[in-house]
Amino acid sequence: MSHNLHTQRSLSGLQSYIEHCQKVIDRIDSQEGYGDDFTEKVINLTFQYAPSDNGLAFLVQVQKVLQPTDIRLKVVVPE
Image (cartoon, rainbow, N blue to C red; front, side):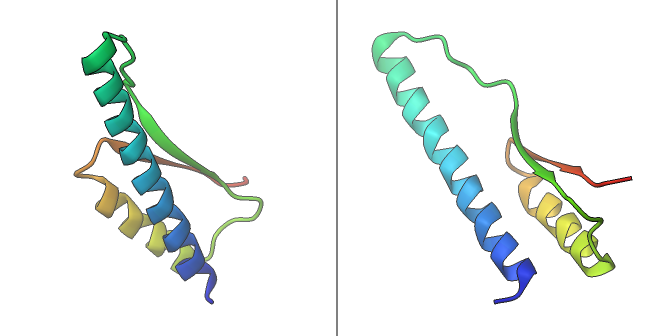
């Protein structure tokens, strides 16, 4: 399996997990009056080595997919 495909599957899983957690929190909040409200949902990717041009292009596509959601992608690359 290519590294980009593995990363894509991992990010899709994270997105689904975040959306599921928000639904559970919303349900609990409406039933029990909890005041939990996440102001920011972030997937933080920290790279040990700088991604290739292909990897960077992939991350741009990921950001486009996440843009209509309330999930933000934060990418940290080494200097």
